[in-house]
Amino acid sequence: MLENNPNISIVVPLYNEEESLPELLAWIERVMAENRFSYEVIFVDDGSNDRSWEVIRSLHDANPCVRAIRFRRNYGKSAGLYCGFEAARGDVVITMDADLQDSPDEIPELYRMVTEEGYDLVSGWKKRRFDPVGKTLPSKFFNGTARLPTKLFNATTRKVSGIKNLHDFNCGLKAYRNQVVKSIEVYGEMHRFIPFLAKQAGFKRIGEKVVHHRARKYGVSKFGWERMIKGYLDLITVLFMTRFGKSPMYFFGGLGTLMFLVGGATTVWVIAEKLYKQAHLIPVRGATDQPLFYIAMGAVVIGVQLFLAGFIGELISRNSGDRNRYLIDEKLQNKSVSQ
Image (cartoon, rainbow, N blue to C red; front, top):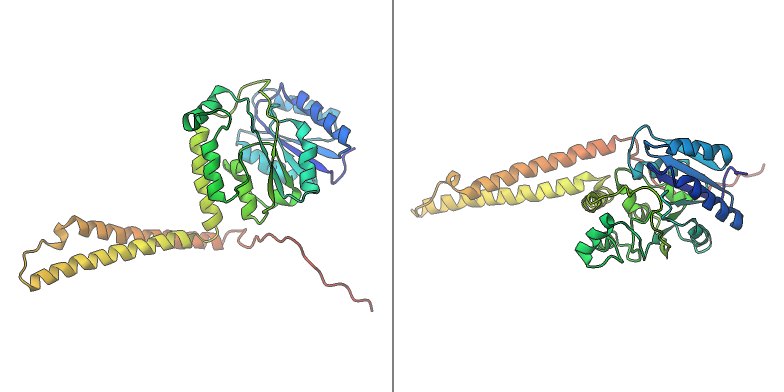
C-alpha cells in the first residue's frame, strides 16, 4: 500500500511513450517489491498525442502507487520535472526517462547513496551509451569518439559550475534528497543543469554513479541537433540567473558604468586634444569629424542604457513575490517552559 510519505518517489516525464509504459512500470514494481520499498510513481504526460494518457489511466487503476499529471500541450522536460518535483512526497526522489533506456535496477543503489552516504544528489553517468546516430554524430564531430557523447558540453559545464566530479550532467537518471527538489526551480530547458542549480541552492554533496544505458526499444528519440546549441545558451542563462538574477544591477550597472566612464574619458580626450592643438596653432580636425568621437559618444549612451536596465531590473526583482525566498535548512525553537 502507498504510504503518505513513501521511501521513494519516481518521477517519469514522458512524451509519446505508450509502448514502453507498461513494461517500465512492471520493472519498477519488481524492483520495489524485491527491496521492500514503499514508493510512488508519478508519470508526467507532456501533452502526448498518442495513447500514453489512456495507458497511464489503466496503470493507475491497477496500481494505487501510480499518480499522474497531464499537460494540455507540450511544454518540455523541465516543466514535467518541475510539476513532478512539486508533487513528490518520497524521502528520496528518483527521476528517469520513460523510454526504457534508464534501468530501474539502479534505484536501490541510488537510494542507498542518498540515505546512507549522505549525498544530496546523485547523478547517473552513462559511460557506455546506445544512442541513435542523431545524438552520437554531434559528439563525433566535436570529440572524435562516440563513447563519451557531449563531452565538450559537459567539460564546459564542469568548468563553469565548479562541479568537477560529474561526467554527464544531462543524464535523466538521478536521485535527490526530497529537500533538494523542493528548493530548486526548473524551467525552460534547465533540466540539463539541475546539479548546478542544486549547488547554487546550497546542496553541495553531489555524487555520481555509473549506470547502465540500454538501447531504445520503442519509438524514436525526442531530441535532435538543436540540443547542442540550446545547451550552451541555457548554460549562459543559468550562469547569469544564479549570479545576477537577484541583483541585476551588479551586472548591467557595472557594465554600464564601465562603458560610460570609458566613453566619457575618450570624449574628453578628443575635445582636449583639439583645444590643445588650437592653442598651439597646430592643424587639427574638428571633433565631430573624427569617428572616435562618435564611438565614444555611443559608448556613453549605451552605458547609460545599461545602467537604467540594471535599475529597472532591480525594481522588478525587489517587487517580485519571491524576493524573500531564502532556503532555511533547519530551525531550533525555544522549548516551552513548564509552569
